[in-house]
Length: 625
Image 1 (cartoon, rainbow, N blue to C red):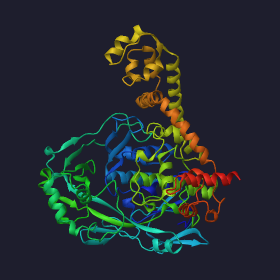
Image 2 (image 1 turned 90 degrees about the horizontal axis):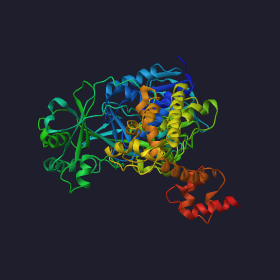
Image 3 (image 1 turned 90 degrees about the vertical axis):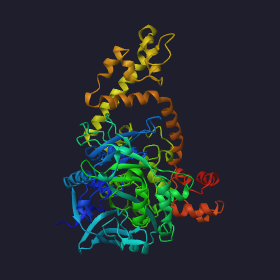
Image 4 (image 1 turned 180 degrees about the vertical axis):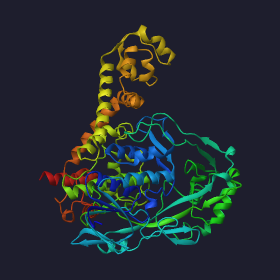
C-alpha cells in the first residue's frame, strides 16, 4: 500500500466527499480516510438536499464539476422547486433522498474515482513541521504523508451527545468522538470553540395516522440538480406531510425544561438560531399555540420518518409524551429520540479564502469544522478546499469565487471575513447579487471556471455551449421579429393581457409577466419553430433559462454594473502592505481586527464587522501616498 499522497482528506461527510472527489478528479493522488466506509456521506440530520439558497449551492457544485447534484438526482424520492411564487432569483430546488441509497451512490462514485484511495481508520494526530502539515497518524498506528491535508471532521471533534441529563461521547448516535486533534491544533495557536446542533426523533411510519395529516406531494417536471443527467427519476416518488404541535404538547415540553440541557446549564455552547429546537421555540415564542412540523420519508421502502421542526435534547419520556399529545401521533412508536450534540470548531477568520489555515501551511479546513451547518454549505467548502489543495500540489493560481460569482463565494467570504457567532447557514438575503446568482444560470457562471482548471469536463462545456447558443439565437430572433396586432390580439386577450394597438418587436411581448415563450409560441408559428430547435431532452430547461434572461435583462444588467463598481475595490490588494497597529488614525477596533484578519483587499476589509467607512478612507488615502 502507498503511504505517500498529494492530498489527504480526513472525514467522508459531505465536505470530505467533495474535497476528495475534486482533488482526485483534477489529478492529485488522493487518500480519503473515514472511520466507517458504510457511513460515507451520511445524512446525519434530515434526508434532504437543497432548499432556500442551499439549492443554489448544490447547482453551483454541479456546474463546477462536483458530485452532490448527481448523487441527489439519482437517489431522489421527492423533488420540489421552492419559492415559485417569487421571482426566479429566489427559486430554490430541494429534494428528499433515500438515505441508504445516497450513501451507496456516493460510495460508488468515490470507489470508482481514478486517483482516489479510501482507508477506514481514525486520524489521531497531524504531522506538522516548521508550521507546515506533512501527513497524519492514525489509531491503527499507520503514518501517511502528503503535500496537503484537508480536515472535514464534522461534529466528531470531542463530540458530546445530550438526551436530557444523559451525556454520551460521540460524533453521531452510536459513533465515537475523536480526541487529540483539537488539542494539538490549539497548542499551535489555532483558536478552537464549541458549537451545538441537534436532530429530531425518528418515527415508525406504521404508527402514524396519515389520514389526519396534510399531504405535500412533490413535483415531476424537468427540474433537477445536475446539468448532466436528463434521465427520468428511477425511485418511487413519495409525499411529505405537514402537521402542527398544540397546547397540550407544549405543556408537556415545558414540564421537561428543568431537565433540558439547553436550560439547566449542561450545554454552554452556541446553537443554531434558524433551526431551533422545539424547546427553544416554546420559550422564545411563548405566545404561539402551535408550530408547524414536517414528516419526511427516509427512503423509498423504509418505515422510518424524520420529524422536521421537532429537534430536541429533552429526556426521552418527555419527547415521547409530547408527541403522543398530537392527535395523529397518539399511537406513536419511535426508532430513536432526538438529541443535541456539542462539538469543536475553529474560528474561520484563521483561514485564507482558499480555506488554507493561516498558521499552518498546506492545512485546509472545510465543513462544520469552520462553524457552518448544512450538507450543502459543507459540500461547497469541501469542493473549494479540494481544488485549492490540488493547486498547491501541482501549481497554479488560487481558486477563489467572488461574491458576485457564486453563493459559495459569499459563504467563504463571510466565514473568513466576519467569522461566526452561531452555526452559519446560507440564506438568499446574505447575497448582495441574488439576481445574478440564480439556480438556473449556475452553469453559465461557473462551468467555464471549472473547465479552465480541469474539474468540469468537456461534456459539461459542450452542454453549456449548446445552451448559450440556443439562448442567444432566441434572443436575437425576438429582438428582430416584428409582431402584428391582428396576428396575436385574440390570443393575448385570452391569455389575460392587453392587446396591441400597433406592431412591436417580440422581445417586448416576452417581457410581459402574463406571457411566456411557450404561450407565445402557440400564437406565433415562427417562434414555435425556433423553440423546436432545442434538443428534446433539455428543451424545457433551455426555454426557461432563456425566458428568465429576457424578462429580467434590465435587473441583471443593473446588478452587473453594481458588482463591477464594487469589484474595483476587490482589485485593490492590501495584504502585507500595512502595519495596522502603527496607524493611530484608525480606531482601536479597526487596528485589532485588521491585524487579526489581514484582509486581501480593500473590499474584504470593508466587510469586516466594526470597520467603518472612515477606516477604509484612511487606508485608501495611505495607498494613494
